[in-house]
View 1: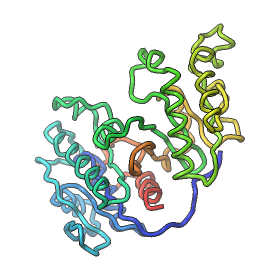
View 2: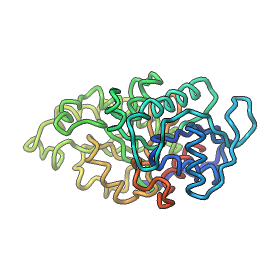
View 3: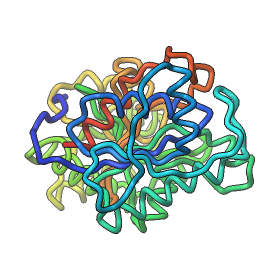
Length: 320
């Protein structure tokens, strides 16, 4: 598969959420605030938490307060959190975490920001607080009114999209249907052209079953659903191929991305190969959303041991 695009574009205004304030999100935001990103950056988070974390990490924190008409290159839009202790995740800050997403999406829709980068959150603490939350991808799609978001993991040389996202494995087969797959392939095709390559991408589609169903002997979803969806997508101008067995599809060098049928069919491969520089991209939104591809890593918060690579790649991609 081809590498990430390195095309140079004009300066953009990127909004970055800190995510869970007790995790490594504030640490990563401080890293990019003190880095060399060419874009204008606005961080959404608790200014006091960021200042305290900067003191703990012994790094600078000299940033302007956000204003829509400001010419500052580094700003913080204050969103108050509650009694944050680094490393101790708390459902008390669930509303604070979700508020960051509301502010970021609203700012993008109003044209104040060009793209959003989201810091890591804890689904467990948000759900424990009583919110119906299955992931930032789904939440942002709902806020922005996007009818068909597609989750894409991207590294320096690999891209893997998902036909289904955060579902129990027992529900995956029932969630896959021809119409949904056709729409996913269309969104993936458009997103790849818009953000990664300046041509029609080649998309390798996996089967759902081992050996892509082995001609129907190991399952018939391939013949009933996946092959007809690929044929319809091809008729619509999408260069899709497959279905291929998931245990060999990643060795192909003739395609630009892989569409996997479920979360743990595709993501372990890219995370094993490129964990530190993989990012999560949501396609199908009215704006670009990128996030580092790791969790809150609460045990590393404030330790100076958190690796900033994925967040740096996320911001760099959003700035293109």
